[in-house]
Image 1 (cartoon, rainbow, N blue to C red):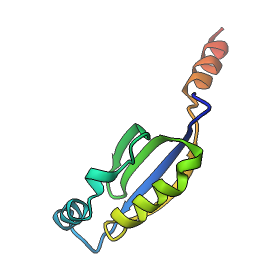
Image 2: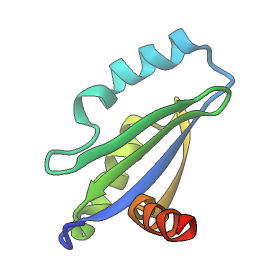
Image 3: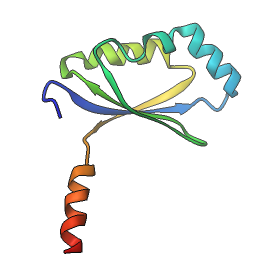
Length: 103
């Protein structure tokens, strides 16, 4: 992992007072699809959890967290409620533990 980045996972929980067409229309109108994520931030994974919403993991320069937060507040709110979680890649550790356990 590049030390110039922090991994961050965002839960975009659907606003269930809106249907999918309303959510998509709002995201287009607000500029979400154009501005998320800001340039210089990388999407590592993007999953949809049925009944919940989108789960997006990003690589973000730590000094740009405020910028990311502002884009989310301006472009995603009303369509989603949001939760932010610091994240790291556990897969290499799992693979090591798994291989050692099988020996």
